[in-house]
Image: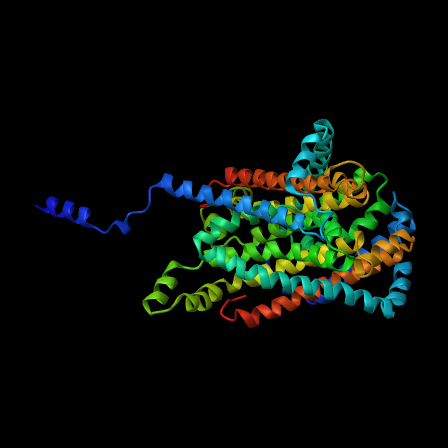
Length: 271
Length: 260
């Protein structure tokens, strides 16, 4: 009897209550995403065909220019930029994370480094370019310094923020369970701060890309920033947009890499 | 930012004095490195040179006009980015249909750093002024859109239902639930956007501008007036910091219900 009632209730329940099937939903979303991207290309096309924007090439012209490029040269430029970003970013991570942790533990280190960091932080990394050109003997080391500088401040800030975000109660419970300094660090502090550190790394890799493009446009030889700038200077305007697309793709790929790494390592973090 | 493991910072008798001491120490180290020409520090300007350049440049009318052109460009671009970015972020956060149509396009353009737009801006705009403003706009726009979007997405569904139960119309919900609920995130986006805007103005002026603080630094480099570079960096840092203080103050006034 009860079962029959339940079945009638299910059958007569308004259709609206049922969510649309998953395939239908994802198909609709996919169609809208495609529409969005096609719309963007269309806007670009319209902007390019306005009478007063003769210089803006159409998406098709840009695609043609891309296909006519020598793939080896482009790959060399891409790898050069990636190397510069990776070097600066890794050096920044290896210095800023330990420094942030030490500053978290030691009041003296904190008191000695914070005022300097606070004074330097509001200066945008781009404003360092002239000084960096003066200081570094080669343009290669200059660009790596710029990517390092761009990454350093977000990483150290998030390391310190992650360190101070750990609830004192966790530390006390760790201690009362008999954890020593090392185990407290390894099992409480490090897992507590890592998600925040990874958020910082993700910001940092974006700024590193920005810095490599700026450094290459202004002073360095080779790399995807220089590619874009040369396209402008030599009047091959479709290549400007090819360069922008490559820069955007590389930036989002490296951000994806950091995010995947972060969620792989911080498995305890509910997402 | 208070760190909690050890005794609080305030335990030091005179924190401000101590900070000044640390900064003086850092300046002394810089001067020593330049004076004794350690590695390539001999190429950098020394502290006395920078001090002289500081007192020549800061009171001059050139500083005022540079500051005015950079500042007005940043403010124009930032206001434009707020005017366009906040409604866009609210709509794509609120309405799923708008999100599906607009978010992919935003996500496609977002990873391109403002600097990479410079050549395109130069060939699109007839003069330097709008292209610099456009670069700054690009810098501020995406953080504002994404933070506003996040803000609108995190609003508790209950608030929408409650408003509807009380008979609120779409506009009322937009005004009092969506906008109000996203406000803390909008302020964060505005602050981040301002920071990136300030960075973008420096780079755009270095590459494409004709005056302003970024151009001043680049010109000082080209004319080998190296001490002026550091004065310019200092001015840019101070005004960047002032702008973020201004936004923090606005935050207290815009989102009084948020605890700092």
